[in-house]
Image (cartoon, rainbow, N blue to C red; front, side, top):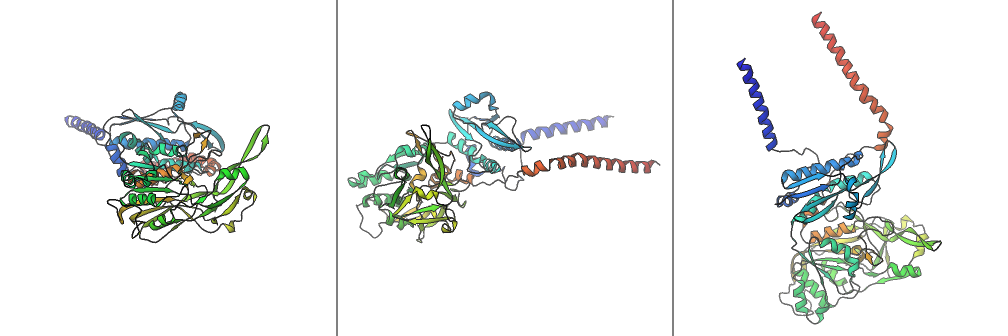
Length: 546
């Protein structure tokens, strides 16, 4: 009897010990093929540096269809991984139904999505957001990625792929301090502030921004060059006035000193505004004085226009109803939707980028590494300038055979040790510490200045990358933000965008059609197994005791 009680005591002690160890030692093994639950070094570094409580509210509580339940589960699993890494991370899921007005006042717009269940289409309204609070800072995380696709499954897959990036990005913004400085060129007829508003508002969250003008180069070239050298990146957005040799030399030496540059250049004068007034316009080359300058670094922006069958739309007046003008959307081949090659962290997992009157780019052999980030579709061609562009072309059915000229590069990344454009040439002015051969640097050349320009309605800037007539969202903002992050060596967060997760989705149509068959199998098959087991068991029982 004593021995019996000692056995029970050992078992109880063992159970208590196992529970104690289980509650204090936490370990999960990621056995998935794509390692979706394994956190990157970037995320680990960001989360490890958090030294106070982070409160995360996730507005994904409620009764959702199976697809969005998957997003809810994946979000919860990811937050559990973050909490396991740092106990300061606290999260809770909230049903947004009771606080709808409060969320709208915070600027969180609900998503209306169509869901098909059992062959029936229905619409659901949800707030796919999370709110991150840390040290009096608040950042909102969009959990449902809004991409240009006709497939809801692709949208959900992309959303799940971006969970780690979105939360790491939000935690990075609320917990880190700015360090890098960006100069936004405000001379040579570059874009006005109102057209850069949305993008600059976005990158201001990560970096210091300041306007910079080259106007003073004419009188104080050395001082201007020294002031520019204090910045880490220069953004040159759609200049329309020719650069002088002094201005180009200032930018050249900025690059030689290791400064990064983002060029958004229109080498052809062609605007939609003038086209709308008369129905046609003359497109002609724009002389910015940059052809030989960029040629030296390894690229040439051609004075032509890319016409692409894979393009976005423009709105044209087609008549009047009462006193109101009626507008319809038409495909406009001069607004190509540039494809991402998915060959670099900058362009991986982004929606097509909307260009407007873009030029083709040639790359030249000069020892500098070049990566084509964006290109036109295979059904595209180039049109030489000067040439007349007419709205009448919209009514003409295009012949695909005339467009099958192959992809045209529209955005190129250059990396390496650049040689000065003024090497072995007379310098426009004398500069202390000038360099003929620069230190390792990077630049991105984009053959369209409108890529960075947001639309304006009633003198109010709209969100970059959204067509104000069709409300279709393009990848302009994501692409440019990735470009700036990469140029400034903030590559950790960019690499998270390259993470690929393969989600297995059901074929809804097939599941609906075969629902009865599988219901019968799931009901009858277990009963048959149970019946067979009972007969066999009864047979051997009778045989044993006969």
